Amino acid sequence: MQREVLENVGGKLYLTTSRLIFESHALNVQTGSTVLSLDQITAWGTGRALVLNLFRLTPNMFYVDTDQGRYEFVVYGRRKWKQALDAQKVATAQSK
Image (cartoon, rainbow, N blue to C red):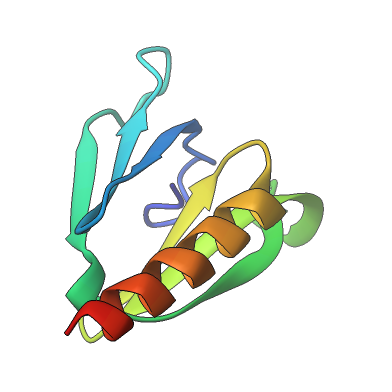
């Protein structure tokens, strides 16, 4: 996850029927978990992670927007995560 652009925080994403969970790798300077309710997520997509605090070169970023701001996650399979969240948001909307 990109936090204050101090480092590209890598980790693992988990998608449940109601939440998106990010757990950073233990080797990062910035560690911890981020839990977002799917209801909080207003937009999502893929992009490039920031390199050396200057350039967006590495194509391994998945982002989600909420009313509180943008969360940028550095993960493998960013397109698959986008597709999975697309499908889960549709399923959630249909079940309401």
